[in-house]
Amino acid sequence: MFTSPFPDIEIPELSVYDYLFGDLTDEDLARVALIDPSGAETTYGALKAQVDAFAGALAARGVDTDTVVGVLCPNVPAFATVLHGALRLGATVTTFNSLYTAHEIQTQIEDAGATWLVTVSPLLAHAAEAAAACGIPDDHVIVLDGAEGHPNLRELLMEQRTPPQVSFDPATHIAALPYSSGTTGIPKGVMLSHRNLVANVEQSRVNIDLKSNDRVLAVLPFFHIYGLTVLLNLALRQRASLVTMPRFDLAEFLKNIQDFKCTYLYIAPPIAVALAKHPIVDQFDISTVHSMFSGAAPLDGDTAAMAGTRLHARMMQGYGLTETSPVTHAVPYTRDDMPLSSVGCALPNTLCKLVDPATGEEITEFGEDGETVPGELWIKGPQVMVGYLNKPEATANAIDADGFFHTGDVAVYNEGGWFTVVDRVKELIKYHGYQVPPAELEALLLSHPKVADVAVIGVLDEQRQEIPKAFVVPASGAELSAEEVMAFVAEHVAPYKKVRRVEFVDAIPKSSSGKILRKDLRARETAAAG
Image (cartoon, rainbow, N blue to C red; front, side, top):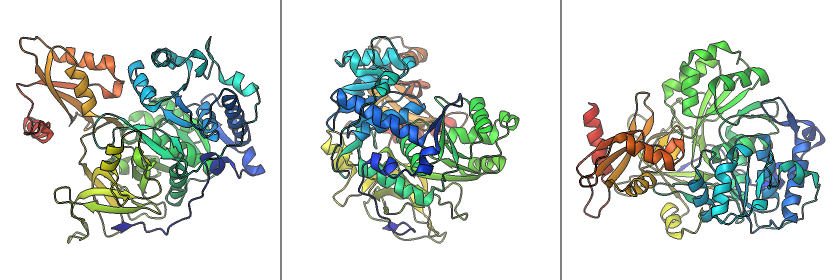
């Protein structure tokens, strides 16, 4: 077993609301918490008042500790008001990807048991269709910026209602219900308690040197647990300022850094690639940036070094999963001896094991190079989820009797104290940091009348980014084109889940038990590429 180099810390026994807003000083209240791209600022004092007023308005409408509130919203300052207003009441918040289709929104609403939905007018068409299909009335669909027939944020805040005092156990009461595919399969609701979220911010404060005078450019989506915990909640806890961006556009991203003098960037690997290589970067003064932190998917060391050198900024990398709130590892700002390709060391209060996937034996020995052999990374700590919603079997498969979460990722440990993720046991495809479960695409394609069988794997494109590729067995006598296959998928899923390559085959390789032999398909792909 490998431990954190940092001593254990005390995790406050508080709700997320009390942890973030319970000890604001007069100086804190005057600080700027949120800035939108127009330059409009929201102080911590104003944000807390809005959170309380929103909570009061929801409570007056029957929202309580048993309510699940869905949030379909891009990165705007009001996201913080909605999230923390609902959490203030002890309601559970389930967040939706802003790119979701109505069908995907409906599926999550039904699974999560949400009875309220909060959105913005540009996303209302899909939201309203999904809400109607789930029997959610219009007065339970809040459109933040206003839409006829729906409550809006201004009206709710103007009621100036005082929220009730609520009581619940932070260790067990579910605060957030993001959806993840886990190690395989269809997305599942990840139950994260107030303690999970509080613990992960408190742990991250040790490794990540965000300060109150920092300005963070918040482009990674708040609906993703990385954005919710590391951008939003960590920044609020540190009393830093967040500049919100509803969507990524490289020129706007660079302009916002320049205009608002941003100092700290949380990014994903595709943004790191752009910062390292795109010529437009030189057209902006982004010299205020002193640190960049990359997560959501592996970032190679060369690209990390190029981006850091070009911006004259420190580049760090971290690792985590939705099931771990999400951060388990990060390069500490106090260490400059760790390779840029590593994900750093375990956070405080975090225990790790490396286990041979073939034998189940724990790996503890170091080789001559000072590293272990690769093994599946298992994690135990206060950030590990309560479990998967209504899926006890999946929970038991993911978290063992000793409390270790089996990540499905393969890593090595260096005797210098850092981990490097080298592969994945799991079959998920990571497209630009988004999880794409092959099983979901396979199930969809099998519903096509011209498809007899199908398997989906991740392959590398020309930019060395992983993309979904479908191996399709056409139905007998059917005429089916690759374009038809891709168009069918695109019609039913969010853009990042689209199938981007198609190969027609006579049969899908399977084991005697009927499991798809993806390794055979990967071998076929490798041979074709070679």
